Amino acid sequence: MPVGTQGTVRALSPRDLEASGASMVLANTYHLHVRPGEEVVAKLGGLHRFMGWARPLLTDSGGFQVFSLAGRRDVSEEGVEFRSHVDGMRRHLTPERAVEIQWTLGADVAMAFDHVVPGQTGHAAAEDAAARTLRWLTRSRDRFRELSREAPERQTLVPILQGGVFPDLRRAALAGILEAGAGAEGGGRGWHALAVGGLSVGEPKPEMETVLADLVKVLPPALPRYLMGVGFPEDFIASVGRGMDLADCVAPTRMGRNGTAFTDDGAVNIRNARHREDDAPLDAGCDCETCTTFSRGYLRHLFAAEELLGLKLLSLHNVRYLIRLASRARDAIVQGTFDGWSRAWLARYKSREQA
Image (cartoon, rainbow, N blue to C red; front, side, top):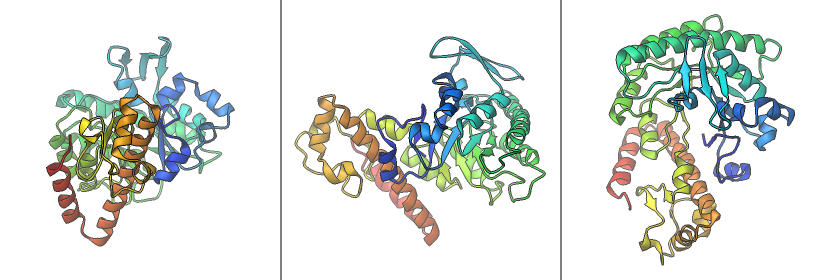
């Protein structure tokens, strides 16, 4: 899912996203609450109309953004008090308020409020945050049920599984999540999906992969699994191989704006002088507007001249590349060839990584 933090995927229009094949976009609860405010979005027709995106929308809980405000926030059992990065005002975000903001924004999928800790956090602190996330989940669930009583099909609430890099904490949190969803039918004990949070936040990649490899043994097969904050090609394929179904990350557009493009032969730095007179497409195997229209030489020129079109074209390619990669991975799964396909893809991606 491309990330539209403030109601926009940077440098890309909704038509660009549709052309790339994106079927769902993520927007950020914290940022839209701070500016322009959820009530403004509601008055302007809700988040879909506000940002001109007619396909499904997911809003995250704001937990990760609050986590990133180290030194500007205080966590308590009630919620989080933080100082806005926009106007410096003190604000208070609770599980109930996070649900209310997302309901007012009008997203299709809302995330329960969670307590995120850094990847290097020790067992005791990770256990405390995971337990608090579970307590906050019951409050999020209860408020969501109140809001959705008159419109049960309007929005879906998804819980977030925390627990750091410790499999025992992850398994305990999963048991708590399933218990919190009890009372409704379905293989997920009342939930329609489950998110895995608190990874890709500073821990070594092998530890993330270990956590996912253990989780896949116990996650309910009926629930789509959403891995939050993962978007580099190699990490995405590794997570799919460990049972994940959805992912989101700012990496495709951020890397694109910085002049880096994803390809099967590794990352391409289009600013490199060796592309100056290169008439080849950015990625001969890609069908996006960037690769079917422009040469590497022209793209390098755009970045050298600091033209905004360059930011758009590489961002568009990276989003399309990841969506195509997901499609290829899905096809390999259906055909029963994913293990061999993914090993071959990774070997090529790593062995021919470009500068």
